[in-house]
Length: 210
Image (cartoon, rainbow, N blue to C red; front, side, top):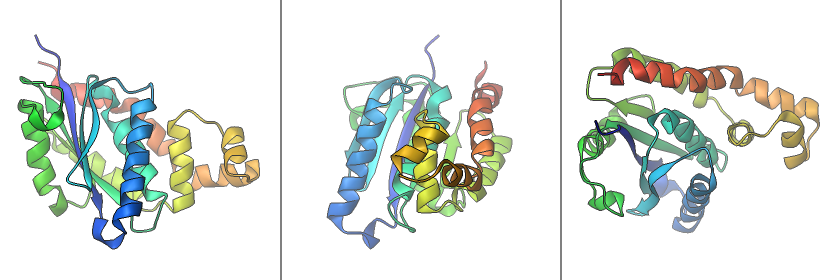
């Protein structure tokens, strides 16, 4: 049986509020971060298309939520209105070429369909699966209430934490005291984010096991 893949279709929120130059720089920085992060095993690496969007394919579906939250933290750190919409389609990929735009399959169709309608949802991370998954979608609504409250400084801290940095390293990175770093970690509700990412594979398996 072919393995399931996670197809990511993402676009910048409020893209027209920023200059094309800065938005491009932010997206290129994000894609570089995702390419270099060894936690992610790519079937197709993230690739920018249409200027404000990117698409990619993860070999391991369990990594999809960590990637989505990292992407949002990376963009949200730049400006109060900067953010990403991320549609995750999980399923089979019957046709996998060297580029996401020319590939096809169940996961691509699920991701594409969700990307078309995610603007109507309050949560900016969505997951489309071959079978109904309303409880998981409800959990993503709760996740949104945490992420939407992040300041730029808290987004920076979450980005660092998702790359394996500890409080001491974060304090050194941003030239702040360890106490200030700990306060930002606490304010970002990292404990809840970390718990959700850790348990996400088990939650996902409830909907993907045949």
